[in-house]
Image (cartoon, rainbow, N blue to C red; front, side):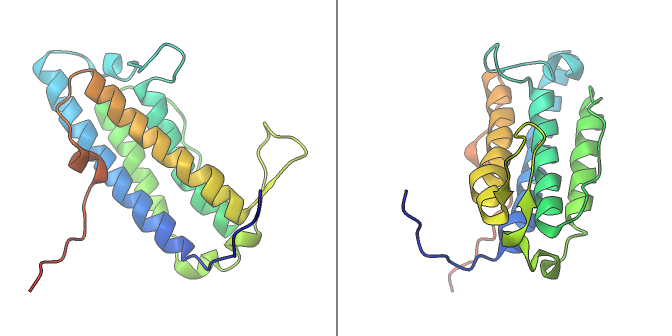
Length: 179
């Protein structure tokens, strides 16, 4: 595969504000789901176990992985250690709290911390003897993985009757009125 010319990316802008926006949207999606299932007298712990298909992770795990991916992405690209959250959430409030703690962590990141992001060596224990450099990690793993799990959480809730639209998934947009 041929390499395209290297383009300077504003990695902070591609990660921190965008992941915060998507996590805020995920909170909004969960709020609609909580209301939907409360009206039907369905315990959210049951909702958290819903899946798109039997061989995929359930909703709760999708949320956990989305938050882990966001904090792990920022930590790895800045050479930091991400906070560790126990995967024990079962209630709506606990999942929202996890998302809020992730957003709080992301808000601590500063653009200058990403100075050598593309030179970071990213290793995973499940790929022994291999690594990714920062750019490959960002574009081939972190961003696709984050959006996959956010999308899958949205899709599970749609499949189970929550009235959601694309705007719920996209979250806050910075539209500017034409003058």
